[in-house]
Image (cartoon, rainbow, N blue to C red; front, side, top):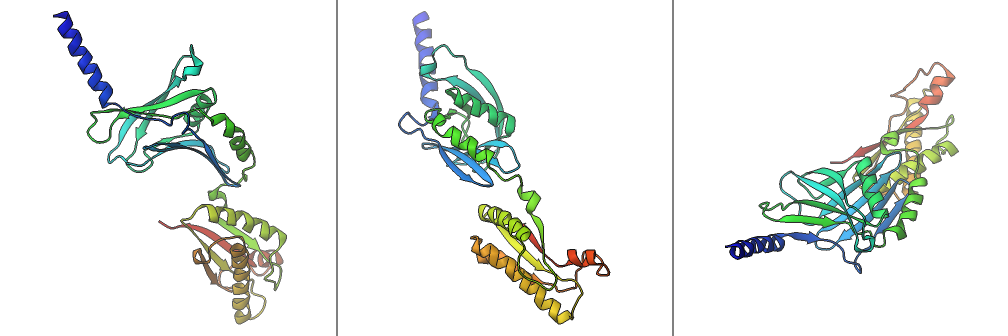
Amino acid sequence: MQKTLFTLLLLVYSAQLLASQKYQANFEESKWMLKASPIRCELTHPIPRYGRGNFVYSSNGELAFSLDVLQPPVQDGVASMASVPSFWKAGSEGKSIGEFSISAGKTPIYAPHKIALRILYELDAGMFPVLQYKDWADQRDAVSVALSPVNFRDVLPAFQQCISQLLPYSFDDLKESTVLFNLNKSTLTVEAKQILENLSLFAKEYKNVNMIIEGHTDNIGSRYYNQQLSRQRALSVKKFLLDKGVPAKRVILKGFGERKPVASNRTEEGRAVNRRVNVTLNVVK
């Protein structure tokens, strides 16, 4: 009887092992790749047959971790993550990292700063952060997805250096920007060029963003002259952005002349802020 029960338990255990889905880069496959820019640092780890893990740090933001998958889930769910010691860290203890909500779509897992930092620390310590959940088809299989620490330390210093050099601005900080012009001029000032330089970096990084450029003047001169001058100012801004690599098809140009002042034209101070070009970063859905 005991032998029969043992055999039955062994069969059940074997069936569970066969049902498990395990995804992990082996020693030869394990790699971490850095993509760096002045506004975004991304550290990516391909997971064969599954997708990729991503650490992302954006300018004026915080560290985040996400998991992109080749086969997206069609419904929400729950997953847990634990830190598992590698074979070369015999004696080390594993630990729970936390629970995650699974969202339908190509990026089902997203971890904010604190958890992302914990995952990064565990990798730096040579541990395997392992995500576990029931499969997205019918929840019959136990699925485990591991991030490999192999070669992680080779690229971590460059990732940290990239973060230290990020611009101190976020997309929200710059999405509505203004550059000012001297009286009767359409040439860009040094200050204007610096603002537009930063804007061009965001515009090139976010491929779903259009730039709306609106030229304005004070009320000195005729309406016709001011209309032409406002357009020349907008064209100067557009040319600068195109020279920095922003695609022309994503730039929308308008000239309003003196019709939309933001301050009184009765004072020099008011006229100075009316001699402007407004640049708006517009996210296209």
